Length: 123
Image (cartoon, rainbow, N blue to C red):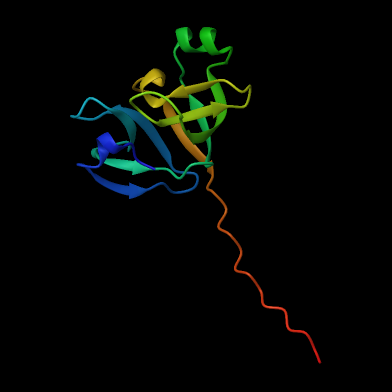
């Protein structure tokens, strides 16, 4: 999803295997944007798998991560900003905490639910 603070900007859905960067928009909110198009917010569905690269040393230390980490995009329960990630080690961070300039690759989009199949009983 896109945090409510990014609703005033043009947006488009994320695409699998596309590369993005965390970007500070004019509203002050950090979100995702495609390189070369910092005016369009990239909206990611919750539960989408991501690879993040270029995490700051401070974030690596505080969350016990390396410079590259895999995570799931989540909706945080508390705080002014709700878009965040849950890293594979269980640690969570909002996009605001991650900061700007971090590379993000969508490694797996949320799988679409299979349509239910009807079952007929033979009488």
